[in-house]
Length: 148
Image (cartoon, rainbow, N blue to C red):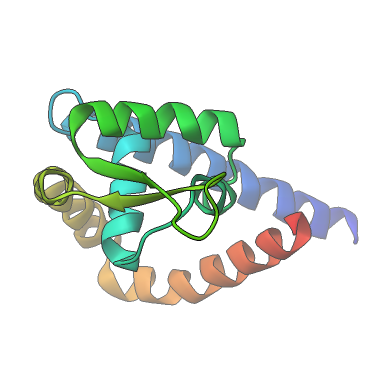
């Protein structure tokens, strides 16, 4: 890469990292009381997948250690937002599913987040966001591939 390409890459990743931090902070502020961003992320993933996942699968999805995911899942289970059961095929593993109250908590969080996100998209411009999404997705896939 040339010097200008290096500068472009550094500038791009600097912006992504700052946007990520600001987005996390903004979203965390509007989440329902007692819900952390990690809780919402797992609930949202389980709601979208509509199937049970093992803690190991969830840890891989979120690029976390199994211990970190286990900690989050214990908090979600304590809140009644997920059900954790033994895997009937392999007693050493567990399976996680979103509970009805977890679905309600996720929906409440989404309702709180939606106006914030919509305001940002409107401010930036829907056309610009549509143009940026394919590039960001491609970058995500490239980075994901580098980790696998």
